[in-house]
Length: 436
Image 1 (cartoon, rainbow, N blue to C red):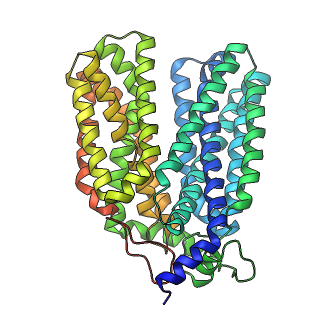
Image 2: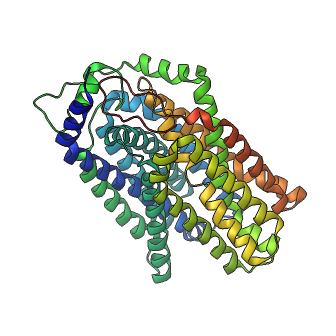
Image 3: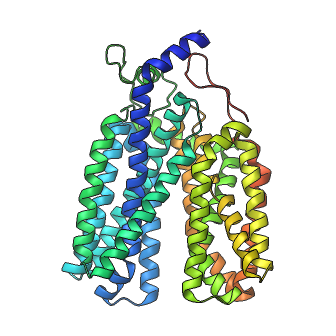
């Protein structure tokens, strides 16, 4: 059994490689945000190019989410087949090419089917890279011994903000959707190609298989690295199905559902709720959305040290409680200062659920990829189902009253938070014991 001194020495020896691995994943998270927000920022331009009615725009937006869910299913067998490094490279290229195809179909060919094809490819690549980068992030987090997953997701937020800003600038300057998307595709592919060089290429980066574990623990030292055993396709599919029998994973999924619904409902409805419910102008509603996004980003940047100090369980309970308080202020208080404070608390409340759910799903080192895929699917289903549910309830009871369903899901996340407790590390790994 490795002693604490051995582990500390091992960490010192591999620290530069771990830093490179971590920084490479920062880039991949930013890239994921970039190609997704590049598309979203130019939806009006694509609509105008194809002369689409609003209901059809809604359908193609739904198509991106459906493609992403397919990507979540595809990711584990693809990763088992080609490895983490090559898998991330493939799906980043797929998503980037999908973005370029959307630009080609909208601005050059004026073809609705080509745009739909591009969006399906973009969604599939985005869903698949979401699984692979989160599994790899959980692995490097274990080896560094500090909580870094929230900051990884903050990098995604930075990518979305940057992509939206670039998109707004291109629209203001009258730059064609084709050239905008084509250049962004090249940038994302180039950044991804450079970053993946520093990510280990195990088929499951936290597999219990001894060879795979040795490959990771000796990452950066080819003299002692061992080649991981690749799972068969049948083993991969079986692992994807059997993980659902784990009650802990189901409870993690409940937390993910509540937090993803909390985040998605704000992104989709907070601006409209501010206008219709609190009487703000359209510009004021957009500003309220900016406050929410800024608060959520701050929560993710600052979240790692907080989690290391109080543990995942209390971090989720704290943020869920903040979210409940924020929602009540936003729904019930018509005074501007009160509902703006509510939006800040709402953003902080939504900040840690998704990244900590990913980390917790990857704690079981035997089927990390399948487990992350499962909980990510629950999160994406929340993003998918949230807009129509809130819209239907808002039509019947008013948009502010419709937000009570978010409050109920936050309470459920609070109750199920113990499922995210850190599991004890296996003997001989580099993971540190951290608070629950």
